Every structure is written in C-alpha cells, then in structure tokens.
Length: 69
Ligand code: FES
Image (tube, rainbow, N blue to C red):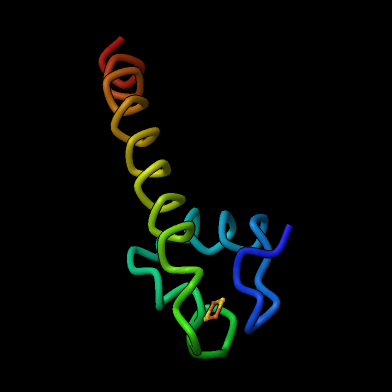
C-alpha cells in the first residue's frame, strides 16, 4: 500500500527506513532519495515511527533481561 503517493513510497518501504534508524518523517523521503511534496503522508509516517519506537521500548526490558541472564 502506498503511504506517499507523491513519491511512490509504500508502507513496507517506510518500515524499512524506520528500522534502519530514520527518526523524522521527511528523512524517510531522503532515505529513498526524494523529497516530500504535499505532506499528506506525514501523519502515517510519523505513526510508523512512533509505533516502531513504542515496540523498541517494549522490547528493551526483555533485551536487558537476556543480557543479564
Ligand atoms: S503524499 Fe507524501 S509528499 Fe505527498
């Protein structure tokens, strides 16, 4: 599914960029060598970044536990 219609960036490509460490919505575009145009994709990309951060936070204690144990 396309998230950014202006640049043809899909949800899977957004996930890939976020997992690679992109932290700002417009940096997702830079990751793929393009720039935002209309900005209508901002909310969905920000949601993907927040969701990724939330999952990373949830995973941290388990990771710490694994390292400790
Ligand atoms: S939909 Fe992403 S910049 Fe327009």
